[in-house]
Image (cartoon, rainbow over all chains, first blue to last red; front, side, top):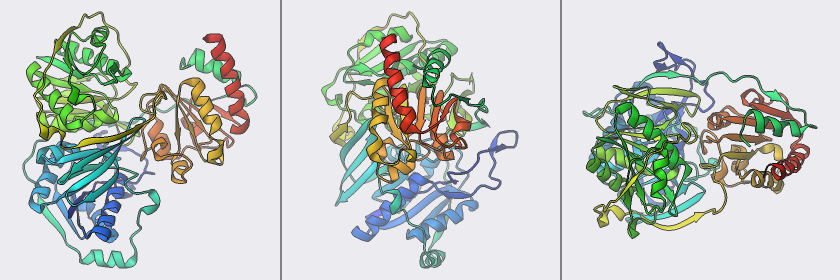
Length: 248
Length: 322
């Protein structure tokens, strides 16, 4: 089985978010970048397939040269080879088209992407990719088993979960649950040394539709200060929620 | 030309989000000078959509589509968009809809923007405001394609009533086996309880509750309020509560009207995930907990004393206001 894990290079979850250039760009100043958490759960599940089912695991991203440390980290975790499509990933449709090209050329059976990146939150790349390639697709995937060309995937639904039977070739939009938080791997020294010798191939972007463009960003308005209610007077809280906030 | 809205139903009954998305669609139609067509699947109350400005309903009644199937549903919606000559297609932000929307977008070569929180700012170029950076920011996004798929965030636009009479037409989609290559085997779903995605009120517990055995009062409080229960990341990581209750940046987003955080200090990732909620209440022993800076109302106190009192007083309140 040949697996491609799609990686997005995102600000660490603790990052403070600011914008620059007249609020038209994300301010990367002082921001630490990491593998998108939803992708990291997928990458870790791919490592399981590598160890238990002898899968070959490649990772791909669409990004400029600055994302290479994140790709090296994916290699250090255990991916066999990395591919970077050299383009600024400003639109999910465009990114999906680039990854579709990578998948077609590489002949992958299973593509694992995150359900969304935690920065731009588009939530569209895996679904568009699957549809462009006419592959099966399962979103918000929290469990995945592959047996030959058959696959069983569980997805999170509102208020529960659904088990689906499907087959390769398959694209999943993964998230926590594919593996547990405690299964995530911190690269060790040997992994880091080996990652330096692994291939990180750079390919140029193909022509594609740029369907959307973020023209401006802003931050939520600062919150007014909290109204404190005395612990011995919960009646007052109920009154405030009923009369002022009008939510009960 | 028209605006098409996918109105989602559950066992034949429209979800509240279907009415909200229909309300949003009416606003888009007004801006574009056109009308709203809805597409529904095995829904029993199609005429209700008129209340929210829908003038025509394409009603799909089909046994094969009784169970949600993302690829098949996306295909049918794309077919409806083509037959209606609709350029703008509105959908909700439910888990099912976020599954089908990218498939629909790819079928129509449409730009897709999810988590939209306000009416379009402009229709030429078509510009919408959406949440980004896991609710730590907003993006104003232009869609440059002829077809546009817009996912409206829950509880963001609200319900707007119009007095439209909806005409109802049967819509017979063309289906084929390839659309059902991914099949539902089993659905394991809580019934009769509010879900985090749909609930108006969410009651959430954190590490301050000390152990899973203390969740009884969280559930009781949630029951009284008709609320969904949720938890912080450490709580789900320790296995006190299922992953499906984890709200925050890597868990589920919350966009409820009221969010009550009990024993949750308010890590930046948690606050990001719940910031779309309209009113936030925090109950915590630590007056310096970061959540107090993000909340509207707060009680500094021990959850084990405050919550039982709150339950008792809410019971009285509910009895008086029933």
